[in-house]
Image 1: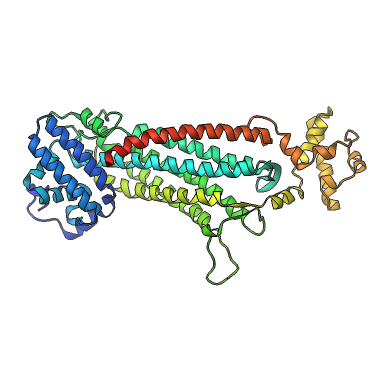
Image 2: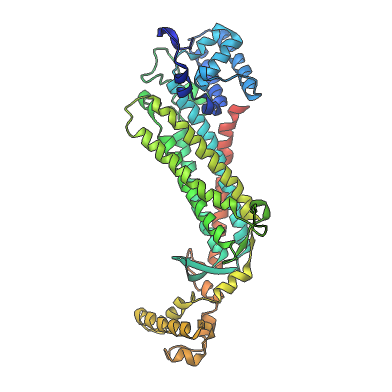
Length: 474
């Protein structure tokens, strides 16, 4: 008989068991379910809802069950539906009928919400740490390439030269925002729903705040209906994860392009590439390509969760069992991608000479010629026309701006003097962007210093919150 089967006259159909069971995936919550149960039973004894000796027996039994699950010695079955019922059944088998007192004053509805919050807050700290590692790898490349110039692109057309370090710092900034979003979401995850019961609370004189404190929550979810039906924290995570993997996907696309023979700007380490079963010469950037591909499944998990929730009345509905697989899948997908990306970026070879050669064979310094004329008091719109004509002339003559003689320049504008050659050199073009956030070397050095300071703050956040989540595992 099911643990909840008292009012039923026949067992559930085997197909129902198979279709509705969640143990195949929610077994990931085992350690969190037991953490919550240990805090709950301690509170039951404190509030004199169950005898202290019963609570102590249950506590010892739960620890035995935890060890058996961890060692793979416990049988988790579909017949017991989910991780909550499986743990309770294992507990009763271990210590007898007294194990049935564990569920006093709670429901699976508030229990599963608790477990998911414990799982997610733990995983958020891991994600922030992985993002920090990736930022550090990007910073390392930036500091090693403060004099490396490559073409900057808009519309995938060469636009203006930039420092490779500047390009790396753009991704440091993107991932910094991801860190901010994930770390900020922690405070919304870190509130205890336990004690909300099925939907309306409980008749037992429980102490919700005591349980919350034991589990290192910052407080409780105030409304019992909201506590069991809220999955905003899951949607928020899936949304934040979608932004993070979108940033990874953009970087992946650039790595795929840059490592091609057509660009030949970088070479990824052999440890992060694969070969072809047919073509022996191939070296494929499969990690970057697969991260780019997995972005779609992360987006899909977000849309799936939003769609599941959009028509649900308060409070708990069985539809909400669909909240876990997408969350687990997204978490594992993102953790795996971030764990790979940091060493892949750190070991990437930057082909400085090839980048510089590309800059020397384009018109990405054309804007600087226009700015030069503006500084000679020519209105920008007129300067734009003049430079456009110069560029057209170069294209027709198969030349670049620095190939022109002074006489050639002056045939378009007498305002141009000998100093134009220094103005149009790639290094001068880069360092002319000497504004906050610009690609000038000194400005990029400022960005690096500021980013390193913020990473120190991130490290402090990780240390504080690791202690908050890890104390329960000891």
